[in-house]
Length: 82
Picture 1 (tube, rainbow, N blue to C red):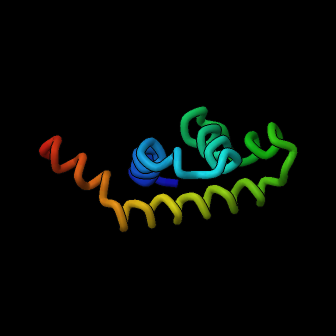
Picture 2 (picture 1 turned 180 degrees about the vertical axis):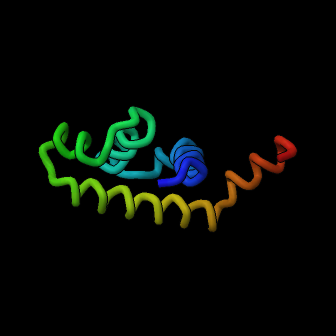
């Protein structure tokens, strides 16, 4: 994942993370904020790497969907003058 994409995903996660299920939130928190690899997250949770990858992919789409509907990130950038 590119650095720019990772930063965007992290920002969206900060805004919309509370809207995720606890499991989705915990996996994304480990992946984004604790900087764990998919394999490390899978090992810590006792699930497959593919399951973690699926959750990350699903949550990424969900976060982008929230932003496309609510525009909180865009509004924050606008308020900051970015």
